[in-house]
Length: 468
Image 1 (cartoon, one colour):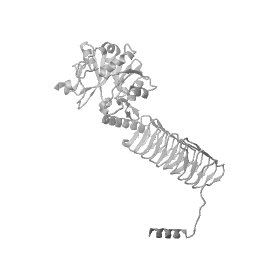
Image 2 (cartoon, one colour):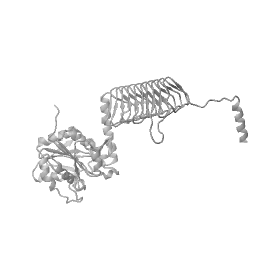
Image 3 (cartoon, one colour):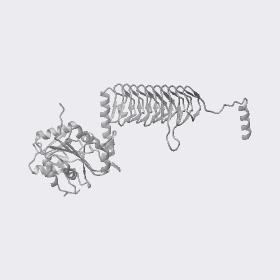
Image 4 (spheres, helix red, strand yellow):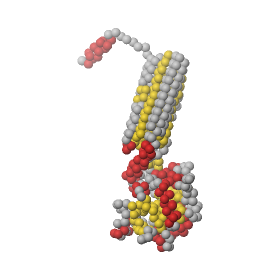
């Protein structure tokens, strides 16, 4: 039976700008494998089925709210960033729970796993502590607050490195900034924090010494994987987190029957679904909310974003798709571009240097070479010759081209929309079609060819004389 934690509440600290990111964008809005950082921590609360989630926002609060639109979370505003303790103080008026555990999480720790938090909650209950700190062990703990424990294992204090003694600096157990606190104790103590320190901020870590002074138990649980609790403070850490997360995602797909030729050079977003027996070549980017069927072959250097791909689809490399739909058995590329609204039906072919936008290409139809198809409805079994263009824009409005089933279009044809081509028609190469073509008709629009026998020699002779 699935374990739930409805009695658990969650407070997420996400008010800071993140100055070390060197960005105008708030840190928690930076993307990580297709999702903003904050989405990972909020997702943890949802996985735990917390009774309440409170997000403390500050910098770019409106943007954060917009990013999480529709997510069940309460927002608390921290107008001034005066430390972690101050951030939790802003959340307290929103906290509904009078007792039970409250998880305090950071909005910039995307690799944290639900099982770790479940272990933290279980350890907190079993120990009977008022406050439990999630810690980890580091071989090189420089820059982190050190955990000082009593001989019995209780945590006595958390010492920042600048305040630590030589012996304390040798300690390898460090604070992760993640806590589990009894709601009753949090209500009693949080407003007693003082800002009498060098930074003039309210530190949440001071709760540890306050609890110890009141003879309340402070426990600690060690997170075995230090990378799991790594905070994102700079761009290099963001890149490291993405590499770790990408490895996890790629491993999950391979375990589910997807072949990745070179996993280290394959980029798959968190919200991508891939069916078994699909093969992905190196340097492919599968992003956004994308669904890819079974038995597909995705050739190298292909990018697919927010698209739906059927079964047994072949991408012959160097393709770009955005908000497109491709049905079973279609063949695309190399070097094709499907823009938003492209709808490629079963067994159709879209070839090299072909661009399709806001158009339906019917089952079995072929657009193989050097063509642009925009705002078009194309039937089944159509053949589009090389260099064909649907001229859909008159400078003010877009217009549609309608092409019936089994139409054959010769090379270098321009359709001046709006225009309708009837079923089974034949369009001669080099034609500019400005009027509707009835079904089963031949349409040719080009100047009459003139051939002058011996004309080439006479022309070159004249040109040579002019050059002299």
